[in-house]
Image 1 (cartoon, rainbow, N blue to C red):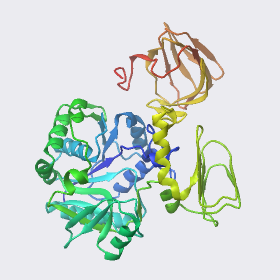
Image 2: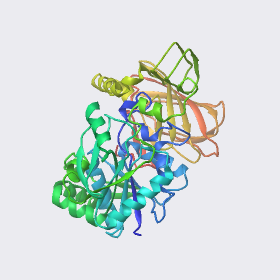
Image 3: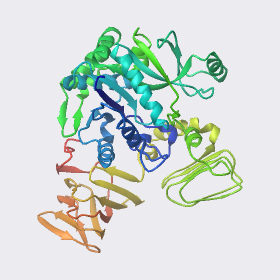
Image 4: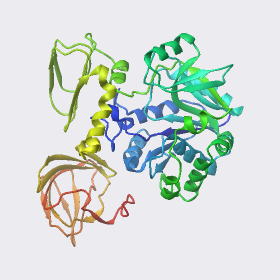
Length: 470
């Protein structure tokens, strides 16, 4: 059997899972079912396959560090490469970029297994068998898509119509309920999972026939890209010239090589809060509950508390999600419409669509505790051995108080250590840096004050993470 190169597509924002999923902390990075994120669960799933290479991850530039940290925490991805997309260009350019990168380091007969990072698959044995079946077809020159055996008429998924044998007869867009019901009754329609298997050679040949502009742009993006540690940065100018198409539209609906492997995987793309409620463990009243929650006469609800107590009385079929800066309440049946709220947040330029109050950085994280016009209070956490950039601010002054751990401080020309309950003051215009030389997390409180407190008031002089140019 040919070698299998997993490609994990970890872009996207999961806007229907707002307020938990945000643009800079999307659903694939969230722990929705257990103590691992959906991305980590995907990596663990493919590690069970035979003849599998270290995964290649395709992520947005802004998600690179938290993705890397989650991958490293599994101790499975030491040889993994993270392919960075400088712009969002849908699944066809993303996959094509991954193929072109793999073509530069792998044999053209290598089979690529393309998997979204945000899917839940409970039947791991069935998944392994489906991959074996797909790889066999891919070795025969097919571009294989995985069709999920439908459990009910579903209007939120596209469908694959199977022809003779494993051939794909057609792809169908998301149907209305009656059409979805008719698909189920016919018995040869499957949910379109967005998972694929193909050889590098076959994919490049077929893309050259049906989507040459995408192939050319992404080939150039890889040729002009550059390696940066475990990251590979695709060239922005070349990728920006690529058409913005899905892989289904650009290739799968046109190629004569399309094949389908039908599989009963106990699968969900967790595309909404209702979908999460369906796959989650429920109490005796049908509720899915997480966090500090008190309920009275509450049935068939999803209630999630991230930051404070949530109490419910007399609720049925309702969604309640609380985070530190937002609360969502809606009928579970309307969970697909959460995306409309995110659209309104974007139009009104509100930050809640993009960031949580806790923001992850390559060195750790910070949490905004209080924010006002001329002052802001943050809790900063720096992981052992990490350091912030050597930087300066034009408009804000900063006061640092160590809560726990040890801090090495650069404050102008001075370099010194601070311990628990010690503090320092950094005036605007002074170069400064924060490091954690210890073996436990460094926690400190930062009080900022000044005429402008935006995160873009940072001038970086040295940075271990390549952010001087950002």
